[in-house]
Amino acid sequence: MADYDLAIIGGGMNGTSVARDAAGRGLRVILLEQGDLGSGASSASPRLIHGDLAGLERRHVFRVRAALKERDIWLRIAPHLVRPMRFAIPAHAEERPPWQLRSWLLLYDRLASRSRLPRSTTVDVTHHPIGNALKRSFGTAFEYSDCVVDDSRLVVLNAVDAASRGADVCTGARVTRADRGETWRLAMIDRGYRRVTTARSLLNATGAWTASVADTVLRVAAPPLGTVQINQIVVRRLFDCDNVYVLQNSDRRLIFASPYERDFTLIGTIDHAFKGDPAVVATGIRDAAYLCDAANRYFREPIAAIDVVRGVSGANSILEPRHDGDATMSLDFRRGMAPLITLCGGDVTTSRRRAEQVVSELTRFYSMTPRWTATMPLPGGDFAWHRFETEVDIARDRWRFLSEEQARRLVAAYGLNVKDILGDAKQKADLGPAFGPELTGAEVRYLMRREWARFPDDILWRRSKLGLTMPQADREALATFMAAADVS
Ligand SMILES: Cc1cc2nc3c(=O)[nH]c(=O)nc-3n(C[C@H](O)[C@H](O)[C@H](O)COP(=O)(O)OP(=O)(O)OC[C@H]3O[C@@H](n4cnc5c(N)ncnc54)[C@H](O)[C@@H]3O)c2cc1C
Image (tube, rainbow, N blue to C red):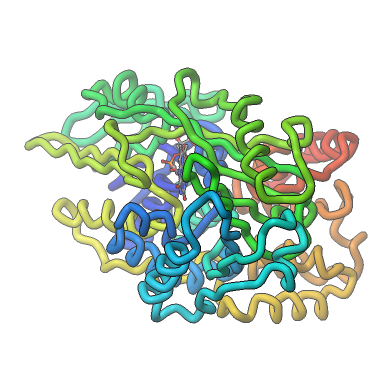
């Protein structure tokens, strides 16, 4: 008998979503990720959980409606990670006429008619906080509701949930060869050791590596895929209000400028064809300049490439010819041969449903329990989304040493599971050594023990964004602490 029902190569949004779904339906699952969870494109997404307003311009009405339905599901199952926001589109004299924006938003409201999020409105920005950061020439903006998400934490919590339902999650495990017979035999290098396992079916969810894994590891014909690079930039905070600005650029692209980790603004996205090693993707000066120019058309405070604190970029496979937002899924099943599924691309908003569809494909091979992921919260997310601030207050009441911002960060990252980190601590010193003003030894140990963190970057950039503010000496102390920590 094979060791597992389903082996998944790739621990990004697609791989972990399938692992969660399949483990919850009773399949024996192993997830193999060569680096850290979310270390590929999944930590470089636009961080939006949205219907995709621009989809209406392309007349993708049904797709927008389906994504809006997913948006509501995410709010229910991940109220800590997914945050409702008001998005603001300033009307620009040289771009789409205001009547067109207004009519899109009316349709958007209608498609989301069951949502509890506030509907769209027209705003006079000369008397509204939205206008404070904008150039004087702007008089009107349109506000509507959508959500932002911490993408890499979503990946990690998918994996945590999968593991709690019996999946084996292995990071630092690179699959080097897969032999196909009635079962799959997978050879890997698992944290330096050679290891072999077997599975009744295999999912290739390796993002930008999909074609090369098909070619060199699975030795099957690679799907017709191209590779694209996505880029965003982080700059010091450009505005005080808690809105996401949607900036219409002169090439008709919509650029998003979002509040990012309290003191910063995330501006993106731009994407273009990519050639090279997907593990080495960096935002180039031209991409940074493009995004700065887009912001400079709107905001009073000018920015230039030199102001970029960090580039956020990733590479992913897309089906050729390109269709916006499309995911590629193919099932290869031959008599006497174990099934092979290939899944790549797609957006974060529809990742849960995509995984559900992929696992449902396997019902013809195995018996399993019904679909479940639309109703069960992710770890720590067992509260209503409109109670987020109440949960922050409860945390501050219980752990009185937490500042409001610290409590908000912890609840946003861990939800109700924050108790597993803070326990009975009465003061910050009870939580072990401090690394910068926010991170404590207790949190580091939790992330190592429960969330597969192995190196400082796993914590500083994927399980949090504390890398933006942590001084170098604290990073070095963190590396020393992690190397010595016994979390077995
Ligand atoms: C150009 C572009 C546009 C995007 N547009 C959107 C958008 O509009 N909306 C949106 O929400 N999101 C968007 N995204 C981001 C979206 O998050 C990604 O499409 C999605 O996260 C991809 O997830 P993935 O799991 O397929 O790939 P990845 O996150 O890249 O995961 C693949 C994983 O496979 C691992 N791997 C590779 N080879 C092996 C091996 N041999 N053994 C073990 N592991 C291996 C890698 O280390 C990697 O972690 C975009 C991304 C890009 C690059």
